[in-house]
Image 1 (tube, rainbow, N blue to C red):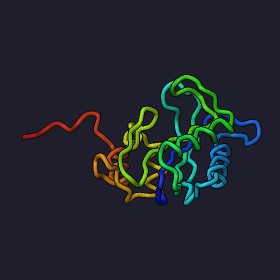
Image 2 (cartoon, rainbow, N blue to C red):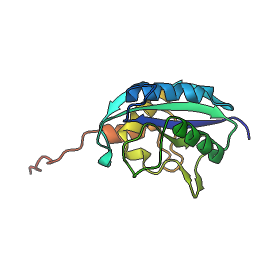
Image 3 (cartoon, helix red, strand yellow):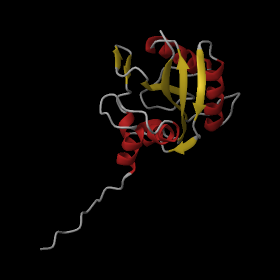
Image 4 (cartoon, rainbow, N blue to C red):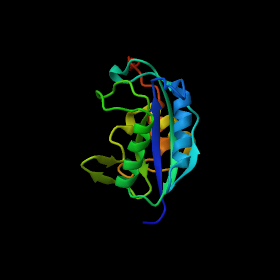
Length: 170
């Protein structure tokens, strides 16, 4: 397979015995991605503090990375899960605390679906902690299912929505 680009979301909300606080875990994960055989780290976004989603409790440090590789999505997922395990990630409850989370959000060849992986990530359009760093890195990258750019998806999510619309006057 020719070189492929991947957008990967990175997150942590637990300290690591070696790397320390979640932001340092995300930074170290970026270095681990850069050192992964067959994977090139093209760029890593700013690391952001974000509130926890669901029962995870503590806030997260989140970022996004753009990778290039000749790995297909299933192979890339295996690589990312191996990095998570190397950082001490263990199976746990959904949306629980985690030392490292690496998710493939998009790839340059459009939609992809297998039993263990769906690209685009099914929930990315509704998550600021994913869209904020992606908008920083690849604002023009298009969601293959909606045709909207990351910039447009981000603007839709970031736009304030009135809670109590102004009354209509005649």
